[in-house]
Length: 164
Image (cartoon, rainbow, N blue to C red; front, top):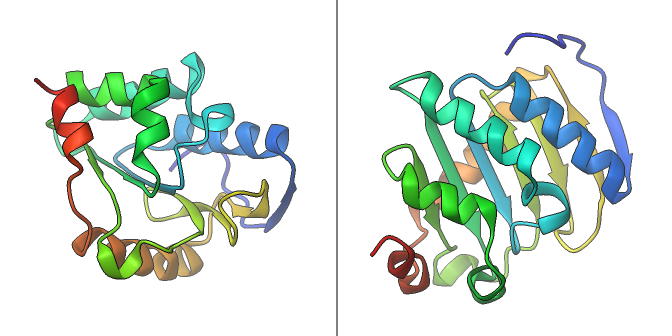
C-alpha cells in the first residue's frame, strides 16, 4: 500500500462514506484484493472509478489476485455488474465464487486490500462498519476468515455462463 499510511480506525455510517473509503483503498491497492459481499453492492462496487481501479490492479502485476465472494448470485447476474464484465475479460486475475453450503448464511461484508487495509461490516445489508487503511494485524485476522470462506466456496454456474 502507498498513499495513506495512517492506522486510525474509521467508523463508517452510510453508503457514501463506505463508497469513498472503498475507492480510496482500491486505488492504493497494488496486488491483492479480496471482497466478500452479499450482492456486490452496486452503490459501492458497480461504478466506473471503482472498476477502473480494480482493472489497474489486475493489469499492474502478473502476481495480482482479485477474489470476489458473492453470497446472493442471482440478482448480480440478472442485473449485470461492471465487475462481472471485467472478470470475464481478466479471468486470469479475477476469480468469483459463492460461499459453500456451510457458509451460505454468512452475512458480513469485507474488503481487504494488500492484507493491510480493510473494511468490515458485520451486517452485509447495512452500510455501517469499520475501516482502516493500515492495520496489518486486524486485516490479517479478517484475511484468515476470508481464506476459510474462500477455500470452502464454490463456483456458481451462473458465473461460468458469463465466460462462454
